[in-house]
Amino acid sequence: MPGHVVPKKLYFLVFAALIFFTALTTGVAFVNLGKWNTVVALAIAVSKASLVVLFFMHLRWSSGLTRMTLLAAFVWFAILVALTLSDEFTRQWTPVPSSWEAQIQQQVR
Amino acid sequence: MHSSTALAEQFDDLEQQHEASSLGMWVFLGTEIMFFGGLFTAYILFRNFYLPAFEAGSRLLNVRIGAFNTAVLLCSSLTMALAVRAAQLGKKGALITFLLLTLLLGLTFVGVKLAFEWRHDYLEGLAPGVNWTFNGPDARHLELFFCFYFFLTGIHALHMVIGVGILTVLIILAGRGRFSPLRYNAVEMSGLYWHFVDIVWIFLFPLLYLIGGRY
Image 1: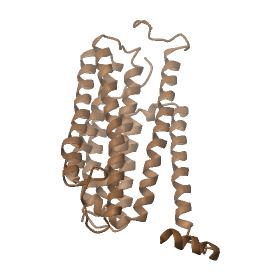
Image 2 (image 1 turned 120 degrees about the vertical axis):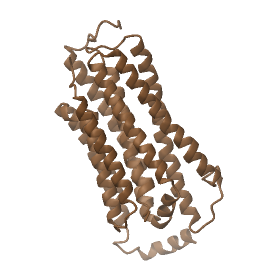
Image 3 (image 1 turned 90 degrees about the vertical axis):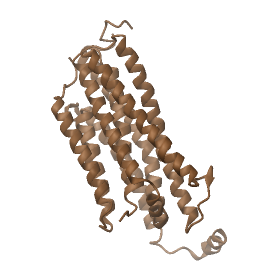
Image 4 (image 1 turned 180 degrees about the horizontal axis):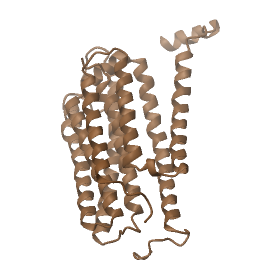
């Protein structure tokens, strides 16, 4: 038989962890952690997604080729985010040439 | 293709056939990551531009319904994983039961979304372009948040509806006895799709509902 049969118990354990993380992330959202609220929420989301990918989607027992495919997708997504944000966050680093000022004023109105 | 032949002729053995199916499905899911990735990137960017408006928008969403729907979707992922396991072991009854449960949980998610969230937002005048009556502070940027909200949850719900369609086909095929321990790739690959849609929601829930500062 091709593919890996996972014990039922493991599925239920993963499910319990997922429900626990959902309760945790909802609870933490009501506590003021400042900037850390976003970090914690995303860290929990990544943990939950990893559990689903590794166990429910069988990546733990998959071939290296399959793992590389997923990794490649994430690398491309990281490039998309990193390049977009690096453009946006560095626009203020250099002064606007004086010849552009008039145009900008016109656009802002 | 005859139902008794588990191996398609272009493959050497079942292992290779299984590997090819998995790889193809994961490549497709890679394109899906990029599809949702574009929307997520735009959301991150505009959230940074108009943070106060986006946080105010988050607070207008019902976090209880969001958490409930997250739990519903996680349950459906469990039943889907158990359905694949039943198919691997050749348990036809269990396979159909778990597929039906997954289908019902999926419909519950979409039903709750439609009846309690979108309908509520529409009646409250929080549906950009359809019924927008909000005129509090920073209304224009709040409208932008709700555009993202409806677009992201709408595309996600569309994926759920497609998943429900796939499940329906699987249930019919399972009823006809088309799956066996040697021939269950369709169930497993549909499972991968279902879990992927679950993962998208795992990120949408905190991004839309939670990180708006609920305290």
